[in-house]
Image 1 (tube, rainbow, N blue to C red):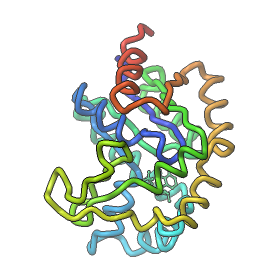
Image 2 (cartoon, rainbow, N blue to C red; image 1 turned 90 degrees about the vertical axis):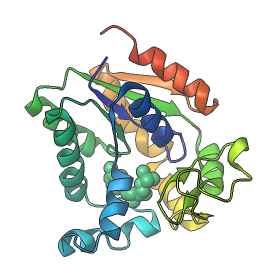
Image 3 (cartoon, rainbow, N blue to C red; image 1 turned 30 degrees about the vertical axis):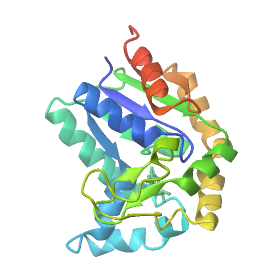
Image 4 (cartoon, rainbow, N blue to C red; image 1 turned 60 degrees about the vertical axis):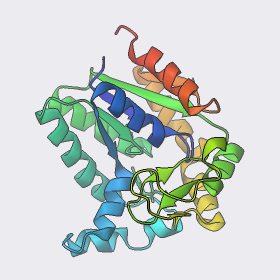
Length: 223
Ligand code: AMP
């Protein structure tokens, strides 16, 4: 199985949920740049220059500067690879420039041939609907994706904290995220990975379990 698994998709496509599932099923490390940025934002000891870079970007749904992403993502990937652990990257690649920078980084580490990119495909309207309805734990930050079974939940299954709506999940920020990270925006990135022959598409509209099955099938493909 490939060591580097990149999950690519529009907001709400399930890339985070599926990256977590891959990490659990295969002992991989789940690396979410969104989580790394939220941890940085909450860390009083973090580099003030990094915090300034973050500033209002996340709250308004804009992409944060590439330099900060590379600093956080590459460090986390290196730590896992050095420990001999594969990675499931969630949201780390959101532009062609970021795809190329990751590719260069993997080439330097000698793992560029050990990579697969998975796109749970979802249309923008369903993306908007799903993000508007998902919840987050106000205490531990655990994200509860929208699913019929989760609709009535008010308490976090992990820590018992109260569930709320993520601060960047307000309609204006969601619209902005779909403009920056929706299907029109990710088209050039999927074209880039298609040209490398590493892109696999799965149907992101299916249930979490069905998508996980499709992903398992892709991951078991022989190189
Ligand atoms: P997520 O939790 O993956 O939805 O990410 C939350 C927010 O973090 C995004 O809306 C962006 O503002 C920022 N972010 C996460 N990953 C990246 C990235 N690779 N490049 C730029 N901004 C990012």
